[in-house]
Image (cartoon, rainbow, N blue to C red; front, side, top):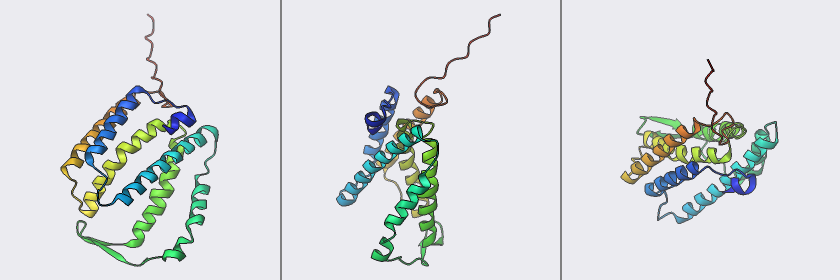
Amino acid sequence: MPEWLFLGEKAKKSYILIFAIALAGIVIAKPLQDDYMLGNMMALGVGAIYAAMITYMRHEGKTETGNDIAWSLLFAALIMSPSVFVVGPGDITGMIRYESLGMSLPVMLWAAGLGLISMGFAYFGISIVLKSINANVYSLIDIIVSPAVATMWGFLIFNEVPALSMLYGGAMLLGAGAWLTRDMSQLGPDRGGTKRPKAKRASP
């Protein structure tokens, strides 16, 4: 929706159907918990902010030749730096035992992963990708891949066994992803929604 309002990038009919299937899969998976309504509301709010950010990054990718995501992350780090003094640094030398892995991992490993990979490398990659594909396509990829990958890592690392409803929902997400992959393979290099022209046969 924000992409259409602010960027004029209308979604193809097939993308709308893929989104509907993916959304139905998420609903079936029941990600929201009844006992954690505050967390649910915060998650929905973060989703809205993320959508606005993707829209802006797509606009920036279309109008600017450079990449200033590093400055954005530096500014965010400076704004959030007082939180270290407000809530404290935590037990930065602590270790956490993971029975499913059979080992203990340092807390700083997760902090570094969140800071460098989940924020730094991820947003740098997103800013590059959004220069070549429109926000509708990226949003579909994200809504399909993120829940599936998060469920997989939750099972492997935290030994969180997904419920049957999550498996059904995940199957629908994977089906939507397969459809999107097939649809994208037929697009032109700009992934903007135009079909790749068929090669003409040479006349005898």
